[in-house]
Image (cartoon, rainbow, N blue to C red; front, side, top):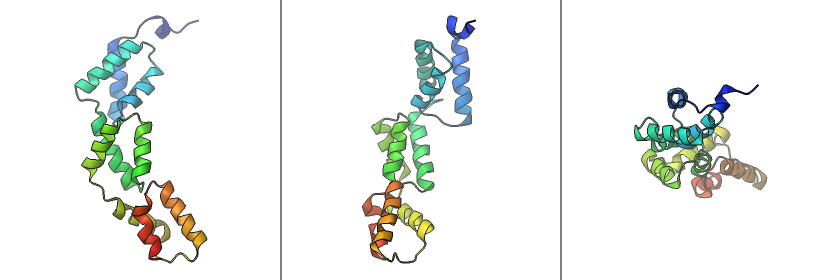
Length: 155
């Protein structure tokens, strides 16, 4: 027995309602919405039409999503490299990413220091092995060596 949704094209209002339900929970990038809605709706053209309509009505905005996402991830202790990579995975353009970073006006040096101090406190790293471990942690978090090197040197 075949699914009726497969045989008939979906009602545009149904696609819009599904998209609005997702956007009501949280902001989504256009790529995220497209990916989630493709699971439910096979009609690519109808889906794209509704997504473009939502963007034109400013109900969905990659720029707004990017700004909120950059701020949220930075405040959770992630550096610019990690945040930028996660934003690319959400199908955001390099332009939207650059604008989000500019609008967020984040001080990555201060954030790196906060992350470092939260993880390690102020005790000195005793040896090279411990310094290397701390550097790997900071790098994993997405901070450039310039952001945290002074913290290791003062240890």
